[in-house]
Length: 371
Ligand code: OSB
Ligand code: MG
Image 1 (spheres, rainbow, N blue to C red):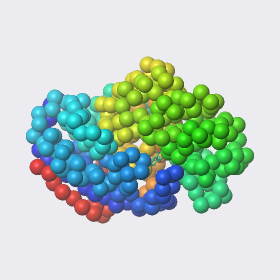
Image 2: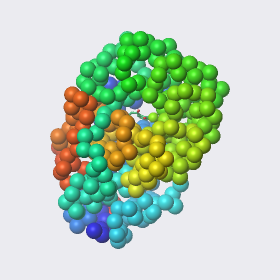
Image 3: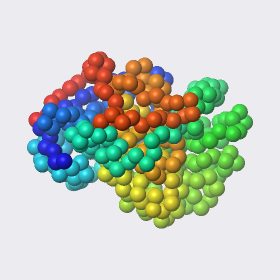
């Protein structure tokens, strides 16, 4: 069904995390998130821009999103007659980078289409092969090893199917050794967020002894060639996150032997249309994928759930329960995870949850309507 967007509402929401989250590039206590609402014929679609508070994961940050949406993206979207959401990304493809911002708008258009069709978003994107999503958790760098062990214990007891721990040169081999000693059986992986270079290959090789499921993005955010070289030296499979911003890059990385597994993040690749292409390229090459997370509010989380219903999402993702992040999420009900570490996909139209407008209002710092 074709649509024409006559209004875009931007919201800046501030949501304190239940517990700080630390990666190799920094610590976050409170999320500053930009939400995008697109309105056509009185029906709203919702999206979330998944960029962080600082330009450290990629070039985007909370402050770059609003001006880009207002000055460059909205004028290309408002009033344009779209045959469908698959055509939205092309309207902003002349903009370099900033795929999370462009992708937040694109994802909102898919949600809009789902609501116009009165069907669940997973159906609109062509998903639905998986109805119960396998969940893992991502655990940040802690102040002490004891604190990390305690957190892992909590999440394993809750039923989560795999544990991802963040590593950095100050928090790696010795810490992973302690985790393995205490939890010899769990599915465990490590995410370095680009904290190493090829000169650290020996140090990374020391992780082989801990039979990790994978090591995620050890080297630079834009360095596929070095990852291929590193993979030749490691037994542990390399999973790429930051490096993969398009299906073409996924194809190249796989061909070069730079990745045996790929983490798909909806925002990082610019939305559902490209995420589906990345998924398909990987499926064709026999490379398993899983859904990454960016500490999303319920809106981005619900989009991730829809994405995770595509058939090649065969590994547990970083999509976990709302309560691990928020005292109160902005959707109703919150995303909850079963005792066997799964999320059941809902059949409600759109992304499958209601916006909790009172909760949303209470965390909104700024709002602007673009027409
Ligand atoms: O690399 O996957 C990452 C959070 C912020 C930035 C980058 C990453 C992450 C996570 C968190 O690992 C995943 C989540 O729980 O949302
Ligand atoms: Mg990562």
